[in-house]
Image 1 (cartoon, rainbow, N blue to C red):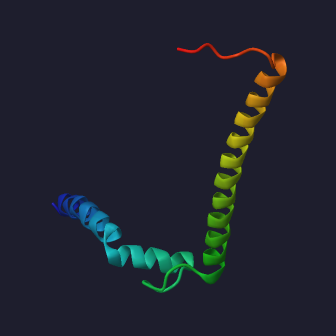
Image 2 (tube, rainbow, N blue to C red):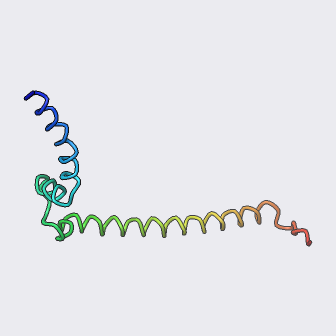
Image 3 (cartoon, helix red, strand yellow):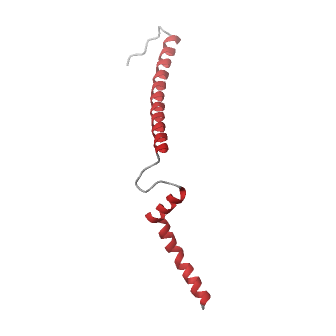
Length: 92
């Protein structure tokens, strides 16, 4: 009889533990165990600096990609001119 009661209690504690772990209280405990900051304080200063640097680099990469696409168009145009400078486009 006692074995059945213990099995029943363990079976009922599994969903209760899952609910507690997924709750804000469970997340707060996990964050504290990982060495995080207090809730609502935001990321650490080092992490914020890294985030700003990554955003700046992403912006620079986008600008370089746009510039590179423009240069490709210009190079194609110059190549077409150099291939046959006297060729005219057909009029439609």
